[in-house]
Image (tube, rainbow, N blue to C red; front, side):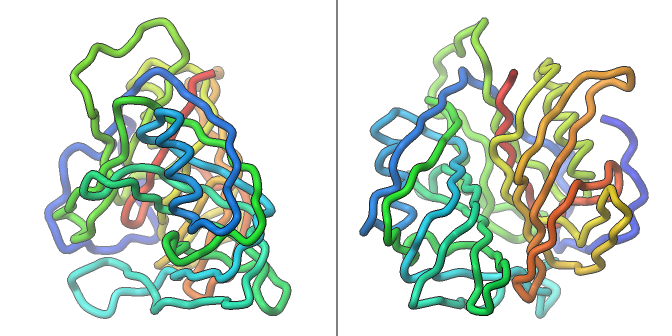
Length: 292
C-alpha cells in the first residue's frame, strides 16, 4: 500500500496497532432482492430472508422505509482513555419516521445473525438526521424493498479488537471449501484506524486483482471529513455511510470515488465526495465490494 498520508486530524487508540491494516476475503458474488416485512424488527426483517436465501454475510441497502418506533445512537466523544470515541445515550422517536436511505452490514455475533446499520431519516424538525440504528428495537411499520449483496460460506463475525477496545466485525470464512473460480466476486473487508478511506478501498481492490468495482457495503466512522469541494468538518467523532461509490482503473492506476453521508455528534448530516488522502478511519470501516 502507498505511504500513509500525514493527516490533519488524528486520535489515539488504547491498544497497540495491528500490523495488518486491511483484512479481507473474497468469494463468489451473491445478490438478493427481498421485502422488509411490516411488524418485524429491522434485524429480523433482514436476517430471516437473507438466511433463507443462503447469504451468510454481506450488506443491505434500502430507501424510503417507514418505521415505528425508531431507536438509535449517535457518535460521541470518549469520556475516558479506554476508547478513542464512543456512542451517545439511546434516543428514540416513538412516533416513528421515514428512513430516507440506509446501509447495513449483515454478519454474525456469537453465531447468531447480527446487523450494523447507519441511516438517514427525517427528524422531528423535518431536517435530515442520522445515526446508528438499534436494529432489534426499530420496527418496520410499512413493508418496503431492500437489496443485498454478499456471499455464502463467509461472513462478518464480531471479534474483540485490542487496538480500539471495541468488539468489531471481522471477515471470517465459515467453510474450508475451495472458492469457485471465474465468476464475479464480492470482497468483504475491514479497514482499521488511521488508513485513508478512499486509498484503503483502492488497496482492497488491488490486493484481490480487481480492476473495477462498485462499493455496496459501507458502514463505519472517520475523523471529521475533508470533502473534494473544499469543505472541512472538524468533528472528531463521526459515523458515515457511502451513498454511492466505485473503483476504476485509469492512467494513475486504481482510483476510488466515495460519495458519503457523514453524521456528527448532534445527528446532523453532511453529504459530499471525500477528498482522496485526507480522511482517516476512526474506529473501523466495514466494506463490501462487488466486482464489475
